[in-house]
Length: 383
Image (cartoon, one colour):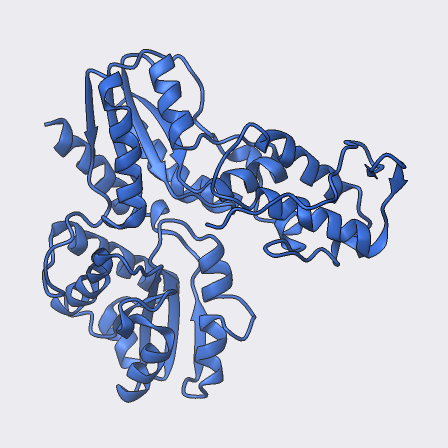
């Protein structure tokens, strides 16, 4: 992520009046909106510093000081009115799992994270709760790897979530002896590699450190190579998609001309073969009207454009889009189901090839069989 320099305007008043500069001038109109945008851009960074907490407060104070009309004018390199203005659910229902008194044994659940509150509670929280219920003698704690998301949640909702370094320092301070790290990542991709690198820096601080498998298990060498984890996830997500769409079976859906498209993130990392393997797994299970796509279009065949052509060539007339992601966050709500012309929903509709294009906004983390896989991975590494 690119670092962004804090713009010239700095909000120093934490009341309804925004004051800048020695002249004490009150900003208004576009000037106030631009000031707020600059403060948002300043915290839209992947590195935490000793100024981050103050910057989060300043950004929120600047937003709160705007009129409704001024809020609609907030536009920066990354800033927009949705940063503070979009309703993503009640953050107070979330547990950041950042308390001390951990004890000797800790399971650190590491996620990329999401600023969508309802999804954080249902998807990431669902996994964390399932793990805690399965291992009551261990303390479950949370870490996010995306500082951009941590800052967003902190600035907007006042909820502080540990990043990797903070979570590991907390474990050291609490004299944790045995640490198990369970990533909620789908695969051994770039995020997983960075997490492992960070954990390794702290390895000598504990008596034992073990890192568990991501959701889909080992990557494998070829696009045809699958495993028990991929099979379990394929069955679970298709079952949920059928249930939500009202079909009794995949055969019934196919008979109605329905194709299911599961949208993952995509990656340039060598682990991108995992998406090809998931497509192979669907075919092995007989789910030949199920297709795997990615936002990034890597692998190439997973791009939205290529999938549209593939579904057209196979004669499907109805499409159901659903995320192949742990959380139903920004990608699911905007890139998949959004109203902008470049969303997947809009692109499928614009093709004119389909009678209907529906979306199911639901993360993998709230599916009980998926939660069980994470529990099983921890059990495997314990043994």
